[in-house]
Length: 320
Image (cartoon, rainbow, N blue to C red; front, side, top):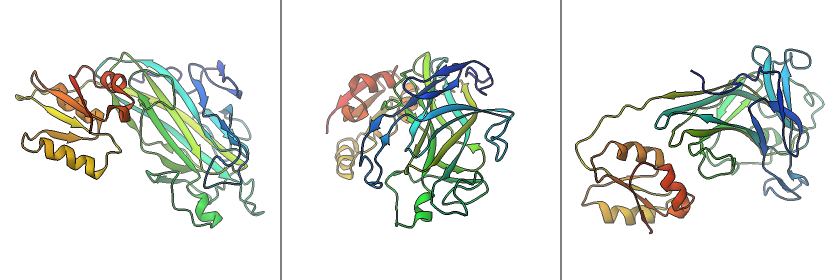
């Protein structure tokens, strides 16, 4: 069962977005990162706008959204920036059972068009860097720090990235470190699934997020979304007959830090991980005395945040 409210954006009611023009589907909240000004992007020093509010609007089964399709079954949602960089999306809080495995997904694609070529500029079927036709590619995990070579066509391909996230604690800050984001992807010209994200609910209220970001302030940075889905499945709870101790390292831990931890725990054969979700799943099924040893808690958003995230596991904090 889809746990989202107005998952297909077909409710005729709409909601406004503070500081932005247009509207979003009922039960959803629009958001955007606000960082106005010049020279905010080291790869785009000619930009003078920075990050500002996009425009939000519905897409229906009427012109100009028939060519190419910008909706699914007559309904969709768009946010766009005309000559603007994007870092924006929508979120929704959802009631869920604690301890469930959550899967969040949505369909999306973008129209990325702005290079001054008279043959392609303003062509709704053409996205710069990929041309016409459906295009999907998993994004470089280091985006926006990608390889650019100065060729406009080459550098246009990674312009847009789409991803989705879950905050298992139910927060509504789209910049929070508590959010688990899925894999980002470049999706152009036709709807495709944004890579799914999963998380374990540690609260009875969680928040799902959609996000679109761009490298360039193209004249057409248009993103289209439809058919969101949040599914919950109960966890299997196979018990193990031993005490589980997991050393949870920050995701940006260095090789020397990993070596330091390995030296300390090698003889005791403790587990070393960099995934809080994996640590939670392992320790939950262990015998009494099982725990997560969190290294560098500040790099997990602070002691309070990571302890809540790992609840109900016993947590011990250690510094390098």
